[in-house]
Structure formats: C-alpha cells, structure tokens
Image (cartoon, rainbow, N blue to C red):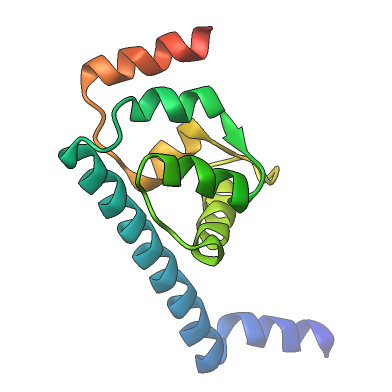
Length: 128
C-alpha cells in the first residue's frame, strides 16, 4: 500500500507543490537577472575597474556578508538575504554543494559576457 501511495504522489503531484517550485525558480531567475544587471551597469559606467581581479583575488566566499562587502566595493548593491539565496542556488547548480561560492561559479551563474582578454586574465589569475 505504501509503495502505491508514494508512486501516486510522484506521478500526480499536488498543484500547490508545483506552484511552489515554479515560484522558487522564478525568484531565482529574478535574483540572478537583478545581479547580472547590477554587474553590467557597473562595468559600463566604469565604476568597477579591475572587477575580474577583485573577484578572482577573493577566490571564494562562504558567507553572504563577506561576498556582499566585495560586491559593494565594486558599487554592486544587493541585500544580504537576496545574496544568501543566490549563493545557495549558485552552489547547488554551478558548484559542488560545499557551501562555498567561487568566482568561477559566480561568473557561470550570472552569465556575464567575458571578453577574450578577460578570459586570459582569469586563467592567469587561476594559475598564480
């Protein structure tokens, strides 16, 4: 009887559960879009010279507070609660679920266009 009940829940999920999953996905996409726009805006205005170097020098972050300070130093403003959500998602989707977000995982997640020269700089920084 139990096996049939589990199978039924899997094959016929409750509409409330489906709605909740969709809402979580929508919030993540909205958060990532917001962060990407903040980064792109700061890059275009020249407010974050050395953006790649600063992030790569930091390497990785295990708390939203630490990462928030780095982003704020580059004129990228984001709340800690939103950043915690983003970091959790980045670690789960682009990372190895260790609770740490690396600069590479960050760039993958926000899908920033990195020119070839910047890609070379990333490789050189990683080799240091």
